[in-house]
Each structure stands twice: as C-alpha cells, then as structure tokens.
Image 1 (cartoon, one colour):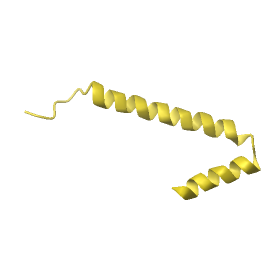
Image 2 (tube, helix red, strand yellow):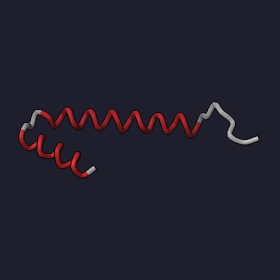
Image 3 (cartoon, helix red, strand yellow):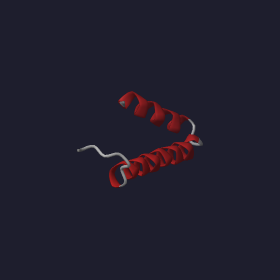
Image 4 (spheres, rainbow, N blue to C red):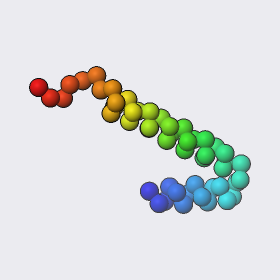
Amino acid sequence: MSGIVQSIIHHCKKTPAVIPIVIFSGGAALMAGSYLMRLALQTPDGVYYQ
C-alpha cells in the first residue's frame, strides 16, 4: 500500500497537474464507499436471522 502512495506523491511532485485528479478521484472513491456502507448498514433488504 505504501508503494502506491509513494508513487502518487512522486507523480504529484513531478507533474503538479495531477494533484486535482488525485483529489477528485480520491474524494469520489470515498463518497462512493460511504454511500455503499450507508446502503448496507441502514437499509438491508435481506434478513440474516430466522
């Protein structure tokens, strides 16, 4: 995992135009993950007990 982070930091230092792409992509992934967690935890359609 740290190799990926180091690679992203290296690319951001080398090409500053990458920074907004990284920020928006990371934010989108975070928001999508939190939305899926909300769907899974608050409104489960399945019943897991009898």
